[in-house]
Image (cartoon, rainbow, N blue to C red):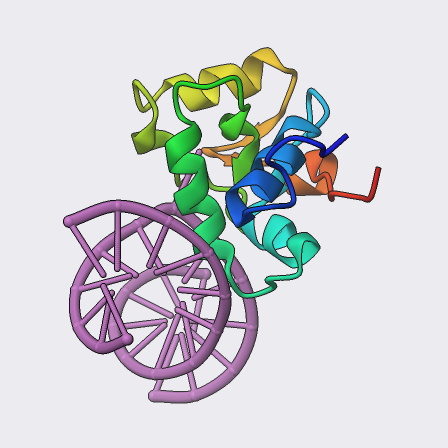
Length: 109
DNA sequence: ATCGTGACTGGGA
DNA sequence: ATCCCAGCCACGA
């Protein structure tokens, strides 16, 4: 439930969605932004996730539209993000996530 | 209050 | 195919 600070701030919404990403799946910034109604504020989504680093939020499951681990440099180590995804059974196409297989879209719970 | 920045996206050259 | 440019929203100073 979103009785917490969720749905109050854009950040809260992002956190809630990211937490709902199933294991072995990934989503894109644009998908989250669009789900929140912002649509074009995909940049703000990533920026919000920047604050989530060090929290329980699986930010490593969020990639850009091309499936690239754009935020890998924001993690503790650049290789951690890919390692985490690999550990979840996500397939990689070179250094990009196979969105066709693992793309997950947020939905109203 | 204004200005600048950003883990993005889409379209054009 | 790749590279560059402009637009978009939210937050910090």
